[in-house]
Length: 126
Image (cartoon, rainbow, N blue to C red; front, side):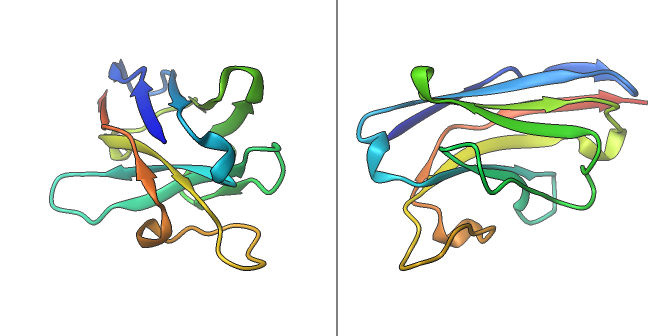
């Protein structure tokens, strides 16, 4: 499975961006996708996750009400709409896909994600 993230850029506080992640290859072997981010000097953290079916959405508390994750199965793509951006949202954003173990319905642990795209930088200026 290959993942290609795009859509990052420079935006002012309060602005919005839409990140896209196009998946190719054996995408049917995965169950869910997630968006993670890593700011300088910080660990990678979950932002949002969703099953390919569109069910089982998860959002980090820091982005609830501002970010929306969605999928387009016809395009094998997952999106992250980011509104009301804040300087603390500045980070490199990564998309990842996971083949869930056992009967798990979702995971937010980056160590469990099997496939990763390259990052896309989001910079929010104050």
